[in-house]
Length: 140
Image (cartoon, rainbow, N blue to C red; front, side):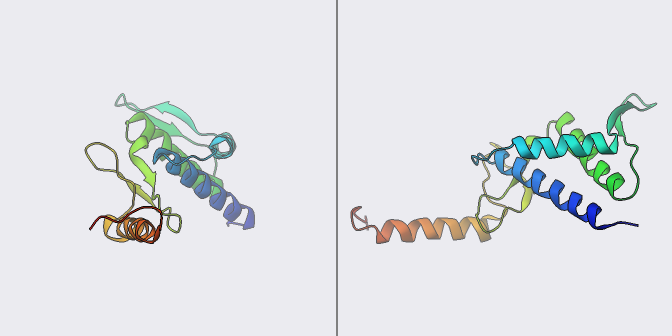
């Protein structure tokens, strides 16, 4: 059975991961609380590297129930870092979005989860702001 504390821990982990993914996208955020949360849940769940018989490194975790499920997510984060793809996981730059996405662009410069949605909205807002600025001339 999962309780209210499991839900609170899951939400806390989700927001910590979102904060770290926002930092991957170049946003100026304080990641210290997010790292502290990730480390605390890692310790509670007993996540640790474990060598598999095939020679690969996996992760072992001792928790069950809600903390066990969170441990599996934390293990995925550590595996993504080990595989070199963690930095490509980002959170959308749009203030009203922050959805997580994988940046598959060649130069790793993607800023929005979907250019058609969040990107167009942000670029449209910037365009309208420039056009309404009475100090800055508009080039036609």
